[in-house]
Image (cartoon, rainbow, N blue to C red):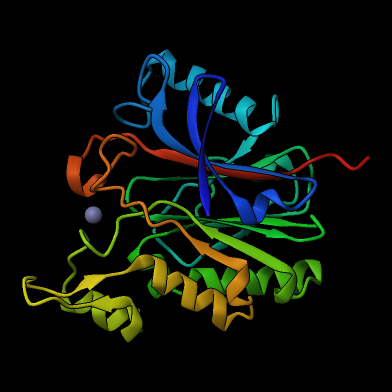
Length: 256
Ligand SMILES: [Zn+2]
């Protein structure tokens, strides 16, 4: 389950599954901070509260001073290796990252797409994924697990994954091209009152993680819908552009 926490004036969510792993820190931000939204307006906004709230969030998850390694997210299936802290930046395109370096945070930004955090139970490596429908169609969750296996020699059975808040099937009407490209009937929901099919992004990604070898008991999915819960989350479908973004992070503590 994901639990809401409030620390350093920031409201964020933490996964019980990942919390049980010693040596790994993580968190899913909401939009809520003490004096203002967590982020506000365009990503390039010069509002100083964005930086202040981000620093508070990093402090709240227990990672004061750690750099946040982010990517230029392009709704792809690209998985990037973060082998040193210079490997990141808005110039590097990709939608998932993996690392074994300690004292750095992998970060993804979302406003309806699913943020997914993965940790090895021995805290040898972690991953962060940004998965909207295009990422899911490109099977980015499955590819990220394969990268962790190949690069760090971990077994999928040793990984836990938390699928954070995303737009729910309740609100995610999609067209026939999405149904075709997702190619997973479990992830498509239909209802007599709905004109078109709806996509369940959580199920699509969960199925990929199962296919990649994670045990069902080691995958959890947030049931919070970003579009329904305007009190907690930004939503691109609800608010349009410009809207803010939630930030989700995961990292490894220094070895003792
Ligand atoms: Zn909804």
